[in-house]
Image (cartoon, rainbow, N blue to C red):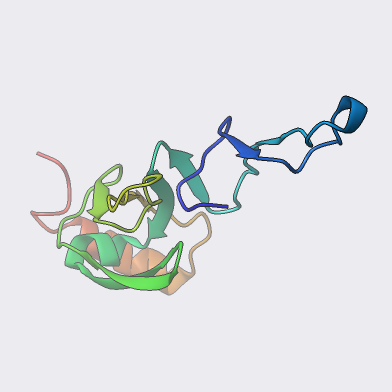
Length: 138
């Protein structure tokens, strides 16, 4: 299949169908493309969407994370102060455009993990941290 095909594309296979009547030439086979849902990626045109969940310290302090891509994995920089819902663009990491040199992007949707179970020490540290002047929204 050519790179960049998508749901509903039809690819004709000329002369690969049934034999024609009365010794006529073989007909064509029409292949209709159907896409299967991916476990981690969602396709929108030639862009790929990926949900990334990071910790609160990673969102606040920033850093580098490794994310899966269609061709393996890649490093992605998280800027300090990244907010939940931020969408980070990884250029040219999406699906190739059919019959073109253009390639879509990978859009990474950032979520921040909020723990539901904390140890006594973690609770103590969070209470101490919450007293800081830059922690609560203004």
